[in-house]
Length: 200
Image (cartoon, rainbow, N blue to C red; front, side, top):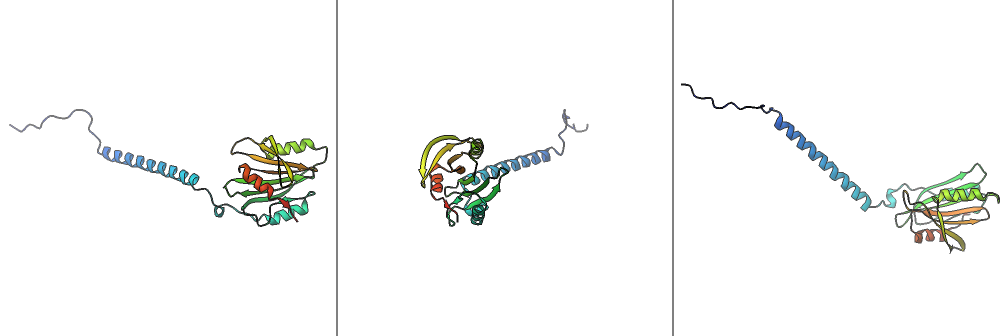
């Protein structure tokens, strides 16, 4: 009598590639996990290690200030030529109404942003235009207390906090608007305003 071949298993027979499939899936899961860890680590490094002045795009702003002084029909102001904060932008913008805008932005010592803007000279009947421009540049700023800095009266204004906080100091003299604005804290903005002097 021949030997029994034993019971025949019932049900589907596992595929030969089944083990390899599970291995590939595990490998893909590991790659996704590593990618997520790298993303989180990269975000942490970005926010916990702020950009340094060497890492930002600096511009030579002083020649632009001199050009603004030549082009503008009002006394252009700016910090001293050797101002410590690195400038990130500077330009002169003639406007269709005959006014001239001078603006320069800086990366502050506290790693925030601060900018100086001037526009003028507005005619006496252009009060509406002045208010519109101030609203645009201060991000719909709401007027607060008046402070005296550098012999000039400034109105503190707080604007909409999106995408970042916006604080502004605004002065209007003889049809010329001067705005110091940015995400910087009040102390730095007031330090900035105190440093302003006529460009010549």
